[in-house]
Image (cartoon, rainbow, N blue to C red; front, side):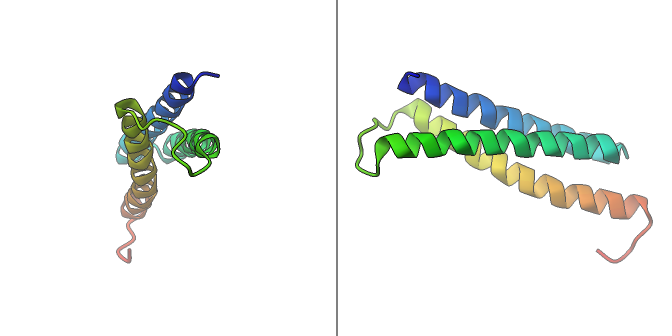
Length: 107
């Protein structure tokens, strides 16, 4: 697979993870916790795929600067970092929605 295709795959997977995590948040806000968990699981799966892709790119570089650092590579890395952050925060926020819906006062 060409270097650019590898980067685009990373970008697509990270974008899918971000979208699924945001969808999970919207569903949880609406009280649809089972559907929210499914979306959060999809986000985790996409992040995992993106991380595998990132690891493959790192392996190609071998820590020696063999791969060019392009704007699209930086953009893909930014997407992955944001997707991972949103996924983590979504899990916490969904738990807060769940506890609020259950009437729990101890967070």
